[in-house]
Length: 423
Image (tube, rainbow, N blue to C red; front, side):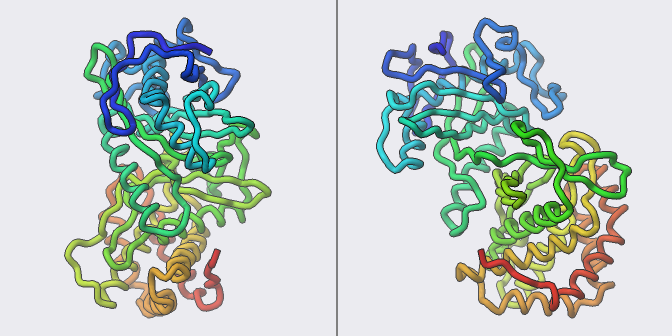
């Protein structure tokens, strides 16, 4: 345990007010730093402290980013996160603790602030911040953006999550508390970050195995229990819940939906306690209408919902093998899971009074009335407009015919198999 040494990054506090550098005092918690777990501490005198922070999940600096001499080091990262948190006597952190516990706390109540660098993500470097208040242990996330695109996404992400948490009554997204930024000493390099809820026990999951294989395996990255393979039913439950969540946040009046989500980016995380699947979405990089300035009559609403479904059915199957490898596609059977999850999401909107109770049955009839050839033509049009990597485009084209066949079979079974969730 130790105080933070100078030079300090300059910072703007989480509450939006510029703050002078602090040298620490006896009333403030000390900080300790780790790579993901307690057995991997990072000290100021360690070689790791001065190493450049990798700017991609694979651990390499992407082209176009600053050279190593101008890059953010591990020491820069930990120092910046701590200095942002300690602003105004740890006002951001004590405010988050207060919301969790329902009682007022001070900086002196926090004890040691333990900061764990969890991973090098595609856009963020998330830190887990652990504190102990009395006999209660609490954890929060500080999502840190280092790159230009990461900083842009982070600002949008924070605003979109807060918007959706205010607009919708369910809790598939984490709580977010406040934002801040730090400028590294002697450089124009900025780190932007926001403080939010840490979802304990939830982990990333990805396709795994040989890309050429006929059956897709899905593996959960659990650092405590170790990576473990999911059963077929658990895979079905995961894709069903992904579709449920995305549909639940679709606005049938404005045509707004969550964009830019991708399984390869770890946007969804899962808890598998007792073998049950519990999913959360942890980022909303874009929330915008599918169409602009379109009348909201019944025909338009149904057509827009059809486009939403077709797009969802394609994108939900895409991933990278082991998170960073070649692009892969989930099994054909997951089309059924996605369609059931889609109707689960509509049912959830009915339950909370957001859409008419007749809408799910109306749309099911609309789907069944479409000729398969017409539906395939629309599917090809949606697939052709997807903005994605060329390798994903090729993968989509390879699977699209079979995808359409599985969709037709799933739609034909709707009257017998549509069991909507009311949880």
